[in-house]
Amino acid sequence: MSDKTGSKIGRRAFLSGAAAVAGGVATPAIAQFNNSTEVERDLTEVVKRNISSFRTLNWQPYFSNTRGGVILVDISSRCLHFWSEDQSIYRLYPTSVPLSEDLTRRGRTSVIRKVEGPSWAPTPAMRKRNPEWPAFVGPGPDNPLGTHALYLGWKYYRIHGTHDTRKIGRQSSNGCIGLYNEHIKELYGLVGNGAQVLLI
Image (tube, rainbow, N blue to C red):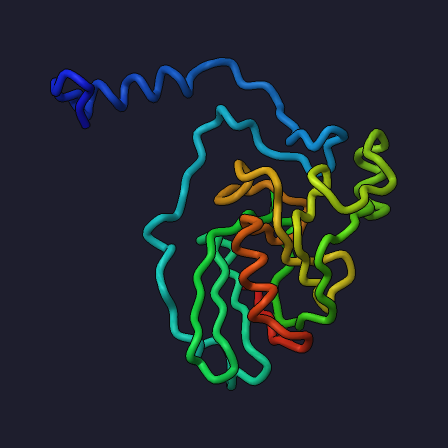
């Protein structure tokens, strides 16, 4: 690493500076979509990332076939894998994942509905925890589901976009899996209803 004068900054000095910045007073943060809808960890907090786990995988250990296309979401490495039915297309996307283990669901389901420009309403449990949240948010830049959403067979669970790009790569959702809007748009075009989904 070097500055404009060409002088090198030592790794130790860089890490010390980063630690000093991270050592500031942390206050709880809520992602702002005007009226916020999803709690997020404090963005000044040091977040451990699983870069070494963000790698390509084969579908065979997880699915018996790729009929209808398959989606594998790896909660630990915070990424989503997609294989098309004929296996000619493979995509790997970074994701946001649930804030805590009690909000996390694992297992097999499927895509049951696709919505471009989704609307959003908090679940009864979310309303109980956060009574100040709006009862409904229509499509648009304030919507926490971003530009596209894939509704899963589990009630209230979705794979969707987000307008808040800080969420990606973090534990920042109330249960859903979030992608950059450009990635969910691409995945939306590749996936059909009935696609197999596995969260591990």
